[in-house]
Image 1 (cartoon, rainbow, N blue to C red):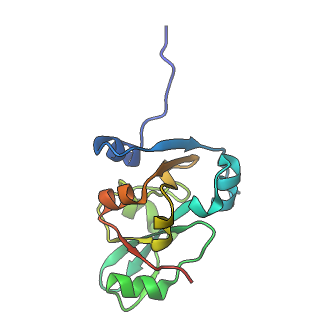
Image 2 (cartoon, helix red, strand yellow; image 1 turned 90 degrees about the vertical axis):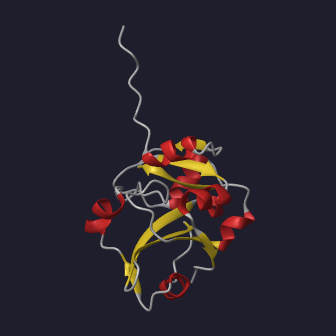
Length: 162
């Protein structure tokens, strides 16, 4: 009898399990016209303030810098530049995302990137016992404590919002 085919674990899930950090997987329907965190919150029946997105930027001094912010908010590039020791910071070009991180748009997790980049989590994450971030694949999220994400990414909590 053939075994049921299961999707391979992502780097993010492997790392979380390896460090024995408790997490919950959430799957949802993903499509090319997917609109983001608010749609994910609706599909998962979760608080929209707990769904965080991963944004990859590039600083003039440090190179890639990762920001994890609430999906219903906007990143303040000036605040991120200051927090990361850069004079100027801009969004990483989409064409460079996979080569830089190992992840594609819509499936970029702050955990398990090709390299450990400077990572900053918006301080509002600490208002929750757990937040929901990408698990490294489109249609797959993971819910875990902000301190767990910090432990895996050496992240700092900073005010990053406009």
